[in-house]
Image (cartoon, rainbow, N blue to C red; front, top):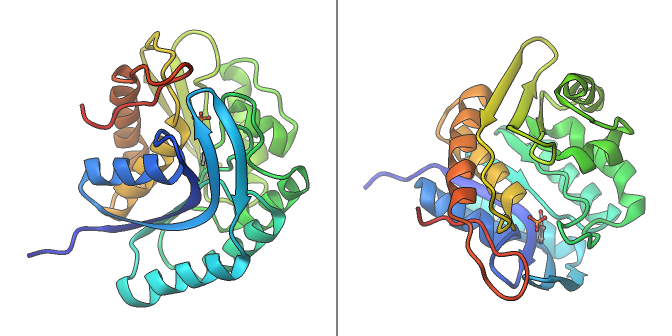
Length: 259
Ligand code: PLP
């Protein structure tokens, strides 16, 4: 028996099963890696929004991380919802010594407009979390929140990537999915631009897309791929997952992992 690549998500729980830790673990299962979780916050959430959330104590986050890393070990780490400045700081400190690729999904606000990160934590994300990232995966709202750059089209995505890279991650993946037309993403390390394009699927059931993409990137990195190859494979995965997104509850349903 061979041990599969080991991937750890440090993120928030979505009680509705569509995003967060639940989307991360489903993605990891679908891609054949061993998924593990450090839960930073618990949301009460369904298809119509986030009704509430509770952070875990920093010590609980630290201990979960140590328990996993000290025995099982990890081949890649993904971070998602970290809720507060204290937890962002705690997780950034734990990641500073990690010798494996780290994918940071700088989660700020849900699709329904519910905040998942305290306003005063944004600066901690910029100055503490982004510098330890191998790949950071902001959507256009998160780019604007982090850098002030307002992306209006593909021509401004390069400027956005440069502004994100100024905080110190190795790669910035700017997700253009909220623009009109083709879904184009730009991966940039300050030298070469890698564009990833997919036909737009007219499906409103897209809850969990950001978590799923970042987890897929982490999974492909854990398998030994370089970021451009990992992002290409992850883009293929998320495109299939969006195509299969299905209605659930009264609001926005989740992307699908069973295709
Ligand atoms: N809930 C949790 C715990 C999340 O981490 C996220 C996004 O990262 C969301 C909800 C929001 O998901 P979406 O914006 O895809 O609806």
